[in-house]
Length: 93
Image (tube, rainbow, N blue to C red):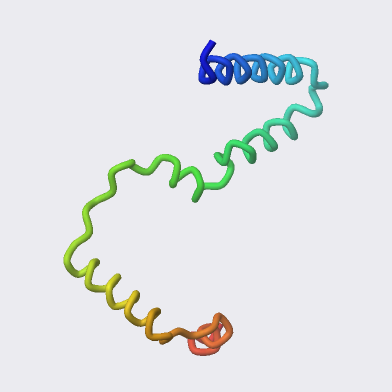
């Protein structure tokens, strides 16, 4: 059995155990279990869900995007940065 096969078998066994545990839960605990499993899977937060659903091949960067990134990198290398508190003060937040 290959390592990948062993891992797949272990995952299958764990999932079967989880199914048994869910089946054994009292009805009153099911909503809490659902929230926790959603949290663990990352699907509970809309931002995480959007990231998970995002296409794997993003749009190519435009020339303007590349120029802006290069400008930011040059500023960072030159030490042209501000602290979080300075930025908040500047933005009035």
